[in-house]
Image (cartoon, rainbow, N blue to C red; front, side):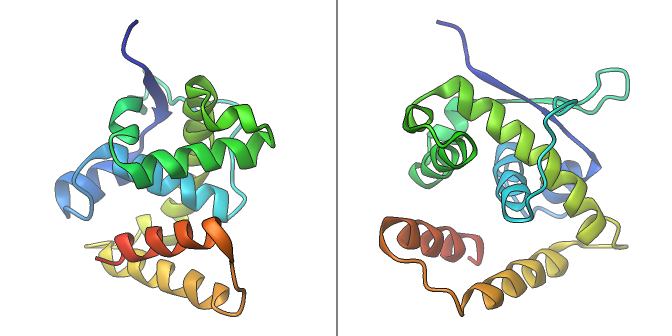
Length: 159
């Protein structure tokens, strides 16, 4: 069986966040972060979400990289389930690849507007975004396993 690749739209923001400012260590971390942003902001691209090779905006990430970290694997599975409302999506790798790429493309558009156009280091803008969304949700109590996942993701992102 060949390597499972997530084909996704990759903008300059990926390079800024990984190579230039080292906010993230790997592009697949940015990919999953943007997928969560896309989901959170209800921004999803159902068409043209894999980038354009002529414009050099197409990227690839191994799904095994996402699945190598329990938290990321759980987030990918939950995104697929939330998008499809099908429990099979929790284990369907093809569905997870599609959903991650679609939400990440939507998240990329949102993020470029929210904190990608800042001159200089986007780290503060990202931290402020996460904090502002967390403050909005502090009034809402998310219980059970989903609450534990959200808390774990928030804690890891704020390290």
